[in-house]
Image (cartoon, rainbow, N blue to C red; front, top):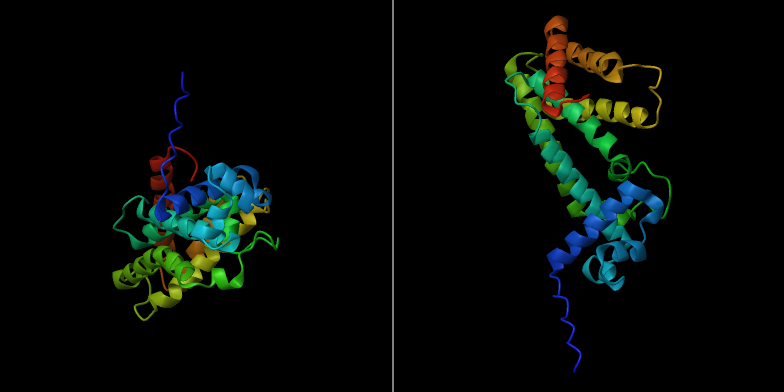
Length: 235
C-alpha cells in the first residue's frame, strides 16, 4: 500500500510570518529573558526557518524593533482601556497606573522599549531603533498622553498658560523614573509605593502647575480606586 503523501504546510504571508516571529520573540523575552532572543531560538519558537528572520525582517535588530513597536501599541491600548473619567487629572494618573501595570507585567519588554538594557546583543542597532517605524509606534502611545494634557489645560484645573506639549514629557519622565526604580526593587521599604511615592510626586507636579492641592490629591485617589476596581487587584 503506498504511503499517504504529506500535506505541505501552507506558505505564510509576509504579515503572518512577521506576526508569528514577533509573538514568539515577545513570549521568549517574557519567559526566559533577553539571553534567549537569538534568530535561531526565535525561529524555532515560531516554527519557521531561521532564514525567515532575515527574509521577512532583515535581521535580529529589526525583529527587536518590531517587538518594541508592538509593545508601544499595546501600551497605547492600555491607555485607552483606563477607567473613563471627566476629570483630566484622574485620567492622567490612571494612565500612569496603566504604565506601571504594563511594566510590571512585561519587565523585559519595558526595558527593551526604553533602551534600558546594557547587553549589546539585546539592544537594537541605532539605525533600527531610530527608524520611522519606531518613532511612529512611540507616538501612537504618546499622542494619548498629549491629548490628556490638552484636556487638563483647557479644564482650568491648572494655569491656563501652561503648554500641554511641555506637560506631557514632564509627566511621562516622572512616571518612567518611578516605574524604573520600582522594577529595580528600589522601593521595597514602602508598603504601598503608589500611595507613598507615585501619588505624592504627581500631586506635587500638578500643584506646581497651579492646581489646588486638595482637589488634585482627591483626583489621584479617585484614579487609584477606579483602577483597582476595574482590575480587581492592586493598581
